Image 1: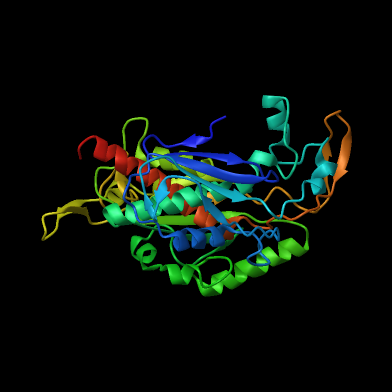
Image 2 (image 1 turned 45 degrees about the vertical axis):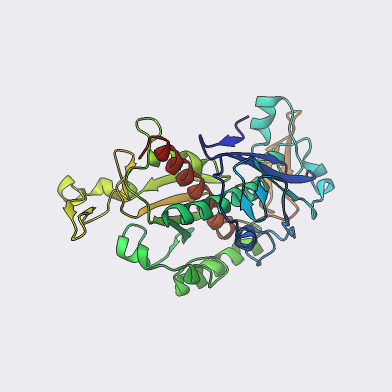
Length: 366
């Protein structure tokens, strides 16, 4: 299985949804970074369950244990290992799923690939594994901020057919969004009136035993020009892989994305100019901060699509491992919409991609 991400800033994660713990090892984290453990805890809180009625009510405290790689609050450059113990897990609640395949889950595909699967909340396929990504991403964020002044922010842009009035492609509007605006409501949408409509729609779906999907916009500023490794590890290619490795993701677009296909070349091209400080910039940024798979110094922005949560309490038809057709009415604790908790996970994976490409660029002497 592919449980390691990155080339120089390498993260390996482990653990299952209802096992004793989840955790990870970062190999390649540079030494000398003063870690803000409170900031890492804040990121975990943003991802944590039971933070509102919009998400799963599994109440994990997500207490972080640093096992190695940090001395007196500073990274040492040795493998940085961390652990988060599962405390509110109830594997027995999933016994009724042992011999059947849940619709749109990885139950059947894991069985087909490995001949065995962990039916307890999805095991390794559960979004519980993203806890480790958030820890590693929070550390990558701190490295990027100290090394290059990079800032990463994401937010919910749409839920079902409800879309924020803030454009997903207009750079002026994207740059105006603040973290305080994002964190001002439970759905993490910086458009207050739209956020209310989103929350109402998710609550209605929850009451009906259903779920909703949507999109998240991510933005990174302060990036130097030159990050990205053509041809197969273009920055947007690595970002796409990172985002589509997240549970429930179904789409990725950078810059103008699919909207750009409706424009002509003369409309879509980003003209260059040199500013008063001698720095090359572009007058527009339909490319989303990259050209040829390499950052051009402009803000990076992209959008990720998440499907509706697969676990719903409405009755569905499925099959057992013995081929018997049955009706499933799922029980347990699940998210009626993954988007609020996916926001910090998108930021974490963005940070891991950028930290790795930053170090790769430095290794080339740039």
